[in-house]
Image 1 (tube, rainbow over the protein chains, first blue to last red):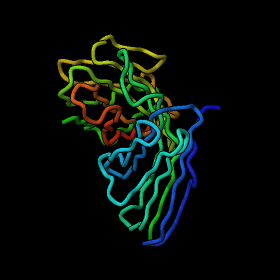
Image 2: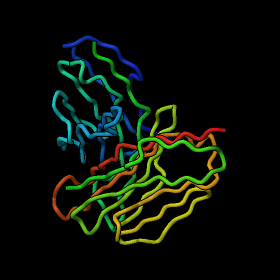
Image 3: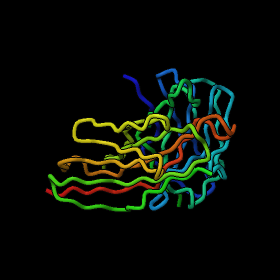
Image 4: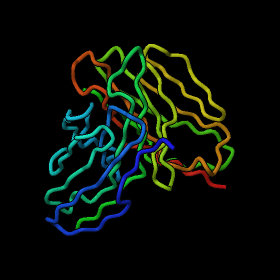
Length: 118
Length: 119
């Protein structure tokens, strides 16, 4: 089954304790991205990756790191989490991050990771 | 800069009513792509539709229809004869083309409209 898998679904941690949220897709998608969703702010992009070893900042990258060593995986790393990073996080992938021949690929989303930093 | 505005934060209707969710966008690009996503109470995000800027034909899919008007930069979403299962947060999103060499492929989301359909 084609899917984007995020783990864990729920995570409670303390300020400063490094954590990683994993994301894996089995659709051979080139493009992967991380979003955070906060009440009243909608979805905001943290980082994205156009392909292996190609990553770039989104709108709210501060406090986050990513890596794309393999096509299928795109982990989100919080080196020193803070309470303002408490949020619902979504990983997403699409066939391509570029629009070719008048088509832009839709995003396939994971089920989300609810992170609480105390 | 690109921007998506969903002015309706929350809408509440009674089952079988028709409801329209508004989406207004801003972009410098002449070629761009518009999307609608649904987020039901279970939390996942589900792709509903994609529309190219050069195709202004409206689309209907069952009880769902989309009205794209370039002249007013709007891409509104109508649910006909709403059902309780339509209760969700709906997001409109914009993706620009490669013309300005900027954030290719990035989707800019609106803040979402929470739709509650009561029995």
